[in-house]
Image 1 (cartoon, rainbow, N blue to C red):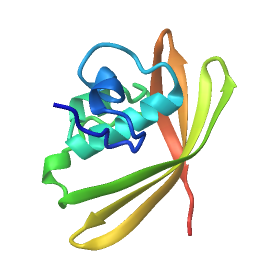
Image 2: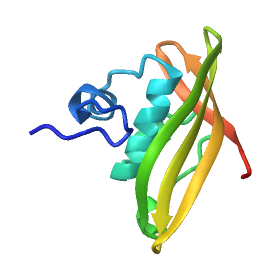
Image 3: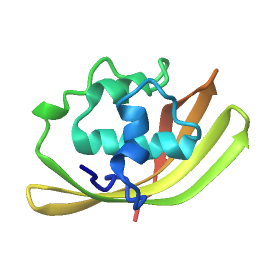
Amino acid sequence: MSQPCPCGSAQDYSLCCGRYLDSDLPAPTAEALMRSRYTAFVLGREAYLLATWHPDFRPAELNLASEAQTKWLGLDVRRHEDLDPTRAIVEFVARYKIGGRAHRLHETSRFVRIGEHWHYTDGDLHQR
């Protein structure tokens, strides 16, 4: 059964982020990893989020289930830039609701590649 990917790519989940979330296949670009991480937040896939976080920046745990109920509404990738073969940035806006109240997360995220795998390190939040 086909279903649209939560990352907003207009592709089927299995052909988009599902390729990375449901297998050991590494995301080929920082943007693909960022989209798959957004999808992992939507689906509550903590193990994937932790596995794709750079070890030097990764929290010990996330506890998504214990946080306030978040309803993810959409993702807008604004910019993807490869800084060199092992470093990239992705600017995005993620929209979500908590308790019926709308929020936006606007971030420029940093990624590093170790071998074939991209990893999220950290990011800078943009204020409105």
